[in-house]
Image (cartoon, rainbow, N blue to C red):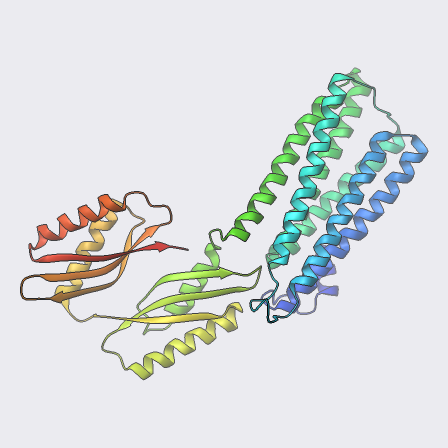
Length: 387
């Protein structure tokens, strides 16, 4: 069913890097969510009126809030596609993150409401209104919400749409909450246990965790969290596919919304290469990344010495020393500049974000180079690994 919907309503569905395809995916996900949740809300409201079940009526209200969340997803997906303007030169892609945050807040609101109802049910236990009709409606709701969870997850992950991924977690939470009501009814009928409140509290904590994760992940994206490692790997792979590019460092992704990243990187090239040929190769690499990943990138070239065995041997020694201290450490732009009284050893040392032992590392590097040759003087710049 999911695949049929994608093929029917998303032209060119395989090209998920295309902004128009991403918009079509987001629109499909939001519209399906609105339809399914509105249908469930209407059915449960009707069954609630017929049976007089407050549990079913409450679930109908929950489905209405889910439909509202899908409306938020639809609006933010469309707004994210607004073209750049004078006030927003990088576009409006982060609107999807705001939509995801709104869905996360809805999940948290639902969780707190469940928690409150659960505590009240523990303090004032009441028998559930059990009927075959109510049970059938709840089971159908679980099945539909289960399908909606897989649908949202597939569509959301295909395009990196954080709002739909958040909606998937919301649907899963709804499945768990409704299943808990069914379990409570069964246990009440078989054993006479009034444990609806206890199960409600447990479910509310699970839903609360899901809502917190959605909000946390969205806030991380808005604040500039760690980039997608697959994107980093793919950019390096495309750059290193050129024989003239010997290494890649200082790779930074600037995230302006799902599918709207801008990158910058440094490419190590031989100091003996032809400048015009290297410039043409860098231009080709930039165009390739734009074509393959729909991601503008600015590549800076760093010339390095490749045919001086003494320099290469010293570089390998320093790299080995760094790895022994911490496997996460690396270096680039390694140069050796001899002088009359001393020899400068210059390089950039890449530290993981949040690295604590920079002063101790500097002292250790200085001592190590001095042990190799007292004339060596350390000149190092400490970079942060943003990838």
